Length: 177
Image (cartoon, rainbow, N blue to C red; front, top):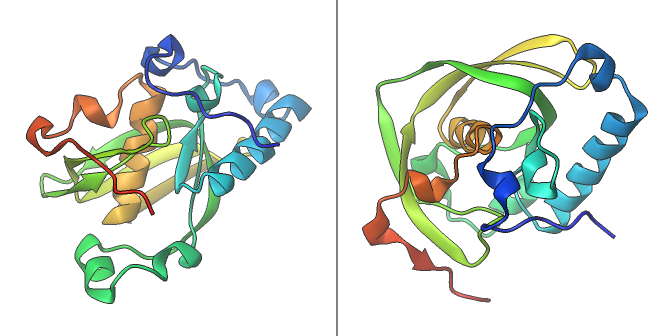
């Protein structure tokens, strides 16, 4: 049974999550949490999941945008969003160290706010420094949809939700089916 995903209204989603030490990163508990979060994200399905979304106020997120998710999306939509598959990876204590001034607006959703979407303006590209699941420093430079996912998950770790950044006039329900 995958971990339950916490929904808007729970105070854990509004807290700044604490950083993890090297000792904690290497612990069996964190390794187990990473696997549980991966399963919950894939079950949902989603492209990212931050630890606060499963009730843990720590600076940890998992990301994966599987090619399987792209099959039902028109090629021109994928191109407009600059969306390509992103392999599974873990972000611990991430920091966006650079964001482009160039922005893009697209509809965005969140596993903690199921059934809703809104247009959110985000930087088109970002540079993020983080630790991987082994505690090794990593840097990723991302553009397009991957950059959006990174910004969305880092926001979660800072107690920010997409509804804080959305164009409120575009807030809408997602059609079922």
